[in-house]
Length: 89
Image 1 (cartoon, rainbow, N blue to C red):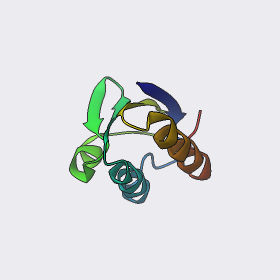
Image 2 (image 1 turned 90 degrees about the horizontal axis):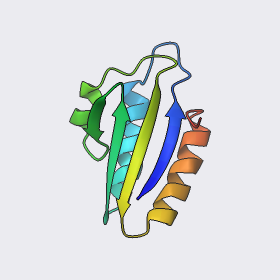
Image 3 (image 1 turned 90 degrees about the vertical axis):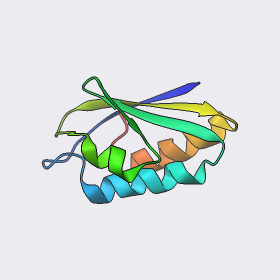
Image 4 (image 1 turned 135 degrees about the vertical axis):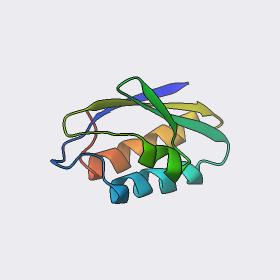
């Protein structure tokens, strides 16, 4: 299992657009399970409904767990995306 740590740096929190980008990247990782954990709540990162049900505010820290095949490749892609979205801690 690989783990990434991030922090939301957006005054309105984790928006639907950002969530959709995270979900889209997660769904490219067919053989991995991805979970986002924030404030004690867990969401399947491949489900937009799960992601939208989380309330992630500005400055909240989160963790992404990556489990399955090609974990290193999936982690690298998420590092790139989180860097681009300014969410990497």
